[in-house]
Amino acid sequence: MPVLVVRGLHATPFEVGVVNAAQFLPYALLGLLAGVYVDRWRRRPILVWSSLGRAAALGAIPVLWAFDALHLWMLVLLLLAFGACSVFGFAATQSLLPRLVPTSQLVTANARLDQTDAAASTLGPALGGGLVGLLGAPVAIVVDAVSYLLDALLNAGLRVEEPRPEVRERNLLREIREGLSWGYRHPTLGPLSISTHVWFLANSAAFTALAVIALRTLDLSALVFSLLLTVNGVAGLVGATLAPAAGRRWGSGPTIIATRIAYPLGWLVVAVLLTTSANVVALFVTLAIEGMAGGVSNAHEMAVRQGVTPDGLLGRVNASMRSANRTVAAAGALVGGAVLAAVGGRTTLVGVVVVFAVAAALAIASPLRSARRTGSW
Image (cartoon, rainbow, N blue to C red):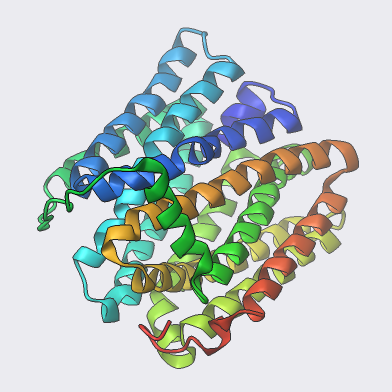
């Protein structure tokens, strides 16, 4: 997608930010509503229909490109549709897992999911970079659309007992308030949520800047850019593999805090070395650090949220947290693109480092310091 936007559609840095933001904006518009209905409906059918919707949205991009009818505003609309389906799909995914495994196994189960996600994210950019080089960016998006059809088929065959949600008086606003209250007032989950929001702001700005700096400032080829993402995916796979052991050794809270500290250190290296001959190496090192930290921390963050939240609230809490995260990410993409266009890459990356450091400080100051044992949150 970055290659299509930057080189195929010749987008400005701010337009790159707009396209990135379009994938996240539906979380702001629909996230709270999706959470209510994920708690009202059975979750497996939501997984199936959301994947079919995403396949349709992505599949339209290469079709429009083939007829020379793909414009930036059309791409934005399709990514809004893709994001709308993702809102429901991810809320259902995160809320179904505790029905499959006991609380004591949530870290390991989330790590297994992260491993498969990282493996796919590792293979995907490498395959995509090759396809872009041979046949163009839209062909890679065809493969992505087909993958969502396979996703829908696999979810349709998932064996899980889903009791009918409890029938009670429906009150949309009250149900939304219940999810928000639990997510932000819980003594451990609340600070973790705020820290994660700040992290998403920094990360989205960083990756918006990364696409422009790598493809335009450093003039890297599509293949080298895809290798950057591949390194990130490989490191994420390694991190997810190590996540259960890290939790047993240090506990979920200290593990999350340690990974938060890794992000500003990694991007600081890129900011310092941006104009030197070592800039490409610095990018690879930073993407490896980021992937490793994300792979280790995500399983623990999800386990904390799933472990402290009752099943009847889980859809709303997951959706509201993801909604806020993606809303902040949309803002980060827009701000990152605007700042990059105004002041250049180095100053933008210094700002990214500062915001990552704030996310780490919020985690350090929270009760996560003592959250060492699974289920002790």
